[in-house]
Length: 253
Image 1 (spheres, rainbow, N blue to C red):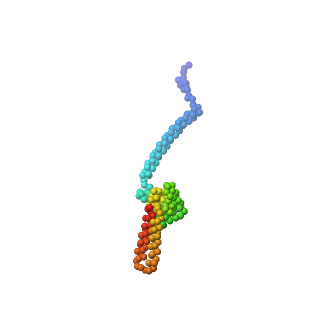
Image 2 (cartoon, rainbow, N blue to C red; image 1 turned 45 degrees about the horizontal axis):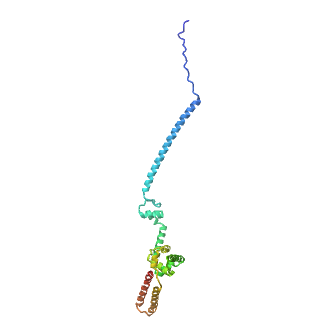
Image 3 (cartoon, helix red, strand yellow; image 1 turned 120 degrees about the vertical axis):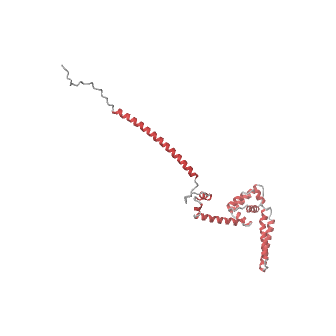
């Protein structure tokens, strides 16, 4: 039987590729996604580290630049270079120009003026008034008692009035416009040897000078009543001279 030329000869079929299970594909994709995520996180961490280091470097540079700038006044926001302005900022929290416009500055100036007037007045007192100022109240008596204790501890046996006069004379010689509290603080800590050098040994010279002054004062009254020209003025000058010698006699033994 003849073969039909038009009849197709069957060819062997190629084996078909078997599809992968869906579970296997999802696990592989999950691993790839996990690796990509880890790489991304490492890149972000590296980037953040670099940014942090960069910011720290910039902050150091900015801080160094600010440290080299002069201080600025909080009130007028201007940079100050003068020593007076910088000291005013430290003390008053604003530059000297701004501070001088405030009532606080005016008050401080008034206080300083009164304080200067008071210290000048104290420095011009005579010995007795200065002694009253120094030891004339309860705190002053405590200061005097401290001096007496120090003197007795050194083996001396002076009377309170001697120590008081000696300390007063020493303080007058070393007075430098200090207030009462500070002056007492200095007096209580004076060297004992210098105190001893200013203590009078007896009252004889003191009594003699005081009596001379009293006699001169008594002679002024009748002279003034009789109208004897310029004699009262001369007598008054003499009395003033004797009174001026009193601190000198008391200041040294």
